[in-house]
Length: 120
Image (cartoon, rainbow, N blue to C red; front, side, top):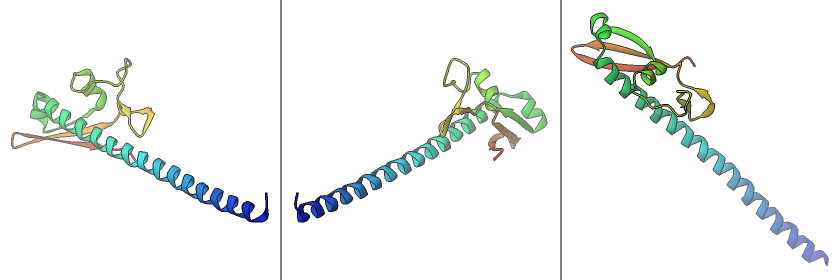
């Protein structure tokens, strides 16, 4: 291999390395954004199902406020669990469950509103 061929080889290898590195970084960031969007969608579903739960709750209608957990929604059949243990998994990290996540329900003017209380 002469000097010129060696230099061309190094240039091509460097360009391919930069392209590969950029692709890997871009792909990993895309998955992070997707996990965040999936988490936000999951919270939206939890909120909507909690409002349906609250609409049938006499305790909420009597007191005006009620705090429940995601586990209460699973037990009452308002959410379908992700596994046979009855767990709702966090899409950002499937080793974490959302079952302990709290949802505040309020009842005012015959309307139920739900708000997820995050402990972050």
